[in-house]
Image 1 (cartoon, rainbow, N blue to C red):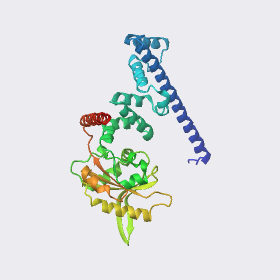
Image 2: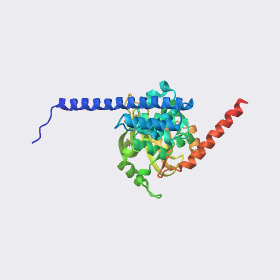
Image 3: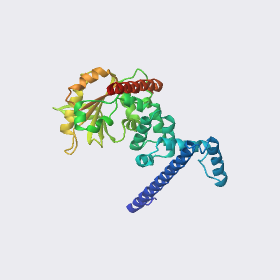
Image 4: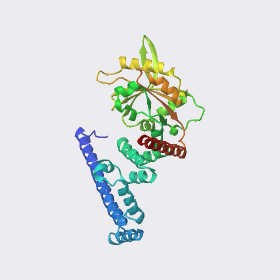
Length: 336
């Protein structure tokens, strides 16, 4: 016969768990600062021609001999610490963010980022979204930075008017390769797949989204309707309705979405909440058609597409390179 523990037991257990988490974070902060300091000394001595690559090798051997059992200070890791310092030379400016990530995350960001702005992008999001190592690696494979720069979120003017930060919450495309959907699939397949892999879908949507319901009942004029997916975003403080379409976006889809948002604002929105936002998640879209559909729309909506396969990252990187070259050329022309 099991004995029900007093309620105080769970509180004490929570205190222990919280303290352990703080201890782990404190150790991580100390290590990150140590790696930066070591990297600084190595970088400056090499820059001043006081050290060469061979000296770093000697340092690694010295540390191994004088401090047996010390791990993580091989020649390769010492050079990574140098790279770490050179990536973030202004410690006072970046330390609040940098200290929050474990070393493994920093290695992924340093090794896979092609430019400083990409590094800063993943650093900020990894902290904000609290990505695991695996989730961070997936975002690099998914070319999230390239997709975000090349294709900003498509939102109506009303969305940015009500929620100025909404452009950073929503995306132009969402990657759902984890559903393993065939090229030819029905809306029901997409719907079932998202519910079955809801945790992965929430991670893809981004931090702040909370699941409310599927086929959420909406009753208007004595008739029953069903909204595909309903979420709540804590940061925006509003309901987010998602309608799924397995075909190309059509402007008329906005009419049905508008109907659902009106119903939610009248029947489901709490007095302290902001008006609901709608997301049309389509298999594909023509950006020009989307632009025309949203330009004069009074509907707080975002139009995005879902992708069932990882994008061609090399192609996106080439497009991004062209994008930066064009921006640099435009800036030069403007200075003349």
